[in-house]
Amino acid sequence: MNVLVTGSGGREHALAWRIARSPSVRRVFVAPGNPGTASTENAENVALDIAPSGFEDIARFSREKEVELVVVGPENHLADGLADYLRAAGINVFGPGKAGTMLEASKSFGMEFARRHGIPHPSSETFDDRREAEDYVKNTPGPWVIKTDGLALGKGVTIATGREAALETVRKVMDEGALGEAGRRVVFQEFLEGQEVTAMCITDGEYMVPLPLARDHKRVGEGDTGPMTGGMGAFSPVDLRRYGEGLEEAIRKEVLERAVEGLRADGIDYRGVLYAGLMLTRGGPKVLEFNVRFGDPETQCVLPRLEGDFARVLLACAKRELREYMTGDAVRPEDRLRVKVEACATVVMASAGYPGSYKKGVPIHGLALSGGAQAPSHPAGASGREDVIVFHAGTKIEGGTLVTSGGRVLSVTALAPSLDEALRLAYDKVSSIEFEGAFYRRDIGR
Ligand SMILES: Nc1ncnc2c1ncn2[C@@H]1O[C@H](COP(=O)(O)OP(=O)(O)O)[C@@H](O)[C@H]1O
Ligand SMILES: [Mg+2]
Figure 1 (cartoon, rainbow, N blue to C red):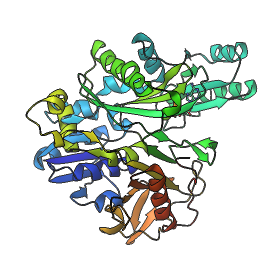
Figure 2 (figure 1 turned 30 degrees about the vertical axis):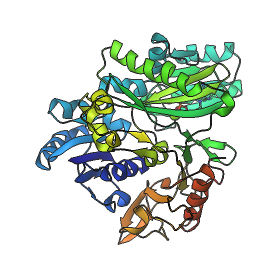
Figure 3 (figure 1 turned 135 degrees about the horizontal axis):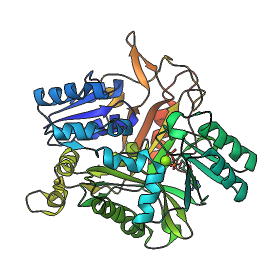
């Protein structure tokens, strides 16, 4: 089959790469893609307008190129209604419609959803009125977790330890509209302490397959210091032994299964990824937020750990045939989704200044463009089983040279028998790549 992936980040490079390696796939189109997807075997970039003005063209393209499945990468494409539009046009889509996207597009909706369906979550309060929000800050003990309700590209959460700072944040986002319409409504959450973990599953609204757990490093500085970013690196699996038996099962049953059942009970046709950002507290896992698409950079370290015909799994989701696919007789067991025991780590190389302002157009050295660096390489290792993959996130070609075009530039990923080895391979690769101002955290996976 042919598949169209939308988006242009590291997550989409990982998706295109994994889909292109599925036995059932002939060709992967990526719109708009990046230099990494362009040089992925079996994949090519296509210039399509992903905004609502281009939906008709996407549908036409899909019919002309016999695209059997569209996989929507970023949340904004979903929030714009791309999945609804294509589904109505008779095209199979992996990704929820607008109704399901509310889980991510409104944090108050997400928390209310969790409450309604008995999914553990921090207590939370929503305000549309600045004065009421200020009164709340004045009358509660800190720290205050202040979240803009709407999509804010990972910039919508502030954790304030001082009352003045909390009031200042409320004023900034609610009054001055520092985050646009996204900030007119704010959600306060109880401050939770613990380790975070990302739990994703793929679901067709009826059946659910959990993906391996991953952990992302969100702050820019080593030792989890400095401002929040989109994510500076991630790894999978996550060692949960210190939490005792049963945590993984609790995540599956109390969070993922309840969420899928909740969506069904609410009458929401949901086909895609459901992502739960969890805090592992003394009282068990609690949902900080839901996302409605693959995480970035978690996807880069989760997809290399999957075996099976990934594209057909996603297609089965899009067609609401996931249960048959995963349990029926018609599918060979090796084509079903399975998880490798190997560990995977991804290290983000970023531009100086990120997550603040940064330079673009800086030449990148040490990455061959065709074949080579983007395709999985097999360094001669004792086991001979390692893979190193450089996923592109913020790169472009300028005058024939690969240059930076974003804050997060590359996701350098390695798969190996142990997490230590995966980290060693990833960091080895990182040290062979250079661009002016490049920085990365040295403590991913630690
Ligand atoms: N209730 C909370 N208690 C403590 N930390 C939190 C809480 N909610 C969010 N955080 C921290 O803020 C980060 C971002 O919050 P999240 O809800 O995931 O928003 P987004 O991903 O949209 O920026 C989390 O990954 C976590 O580190
Ligand atoms: Mg988050």
